[in-house]
Image: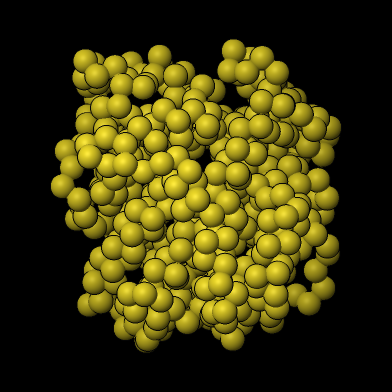
Length: 443
């Protein structure tokens, strides 16, 4: 259990951000809507040149943007958008929720799509909601289609990974959210953003909206997107294999080592903390080497995959992780199934769950088509021609290769903000990034 808790903490750190809200909140309306550019004009350069270090450690507190602590936040619940019975072992992920930051005056509504495996309660939802609320937006943050709560309550096909259907489900949820808030806030227009996988999905949502003409997005911002979804997840697989010698069998020893290093950096006798500051202090004291950092990034992504794969298998009775003849109760021991889920690579997920699902019950979709549908090259002419869409990323983002970075430069041209360092979202909460984001949404 200690290992699971640590992995959960590392998963959050590997995509950095502030602390997530522990419970639903509904604070009073903030009057803080001053423009972010008014904040300190002298900002030190982003400190981490190693992309994996940046990905894990994020941004030191002293370099983060100052954002309102109160943003009239609430956690709202939608009725399920699909008719699906919830297995007892997945009841923890009900109901279908989203986070709302509501202005008390007429304002545009910005949708935020969470990254891989994240719910609407994630730390980055909170970060982006506060950043956009500060410059006058109401904000609705949605769970990722790869989160269990979305798979249960919004996915017509609960095996995430086919871009076409995942985006269609997101689009339907966005319309449900619009209807849900319509009596409470005055909406003057719509914008859209997302991070990581959520950014790639945002690009395809914008493309879908061009055809459906429902939202007419005024601004769309892609934050560290994957260009080719399956190429990016393959890189995360390789990262784990290269940096965790011995594979899954070595995981307990690795976790014990990480725990020990953090404890040693904190000082004996002090309570053990799992957050960015603790990791940063441990890093400053030389507690981790390059392989440790690489393994932490790979493990964080693998944890998200394990949750998704387990839920997909249970919901579709695919007989890959949980045998068909086993009915898991609410208190069933899941250890053996967790180990099977965690051993599953992204490649295994495609071959053993995604492709078989799309080739049963009368469906016939090839693996090549599934992979092709998740590639932004398919919609490059749309991305190049629509001036309402921009991209922020880093040239050293480990989910991209050099050709994909060049694709983003060439496609978006002056609408691409590509920083030399920052890894995968490591500099998202950095002052200059948040200021640039706020400037973009207030153009």
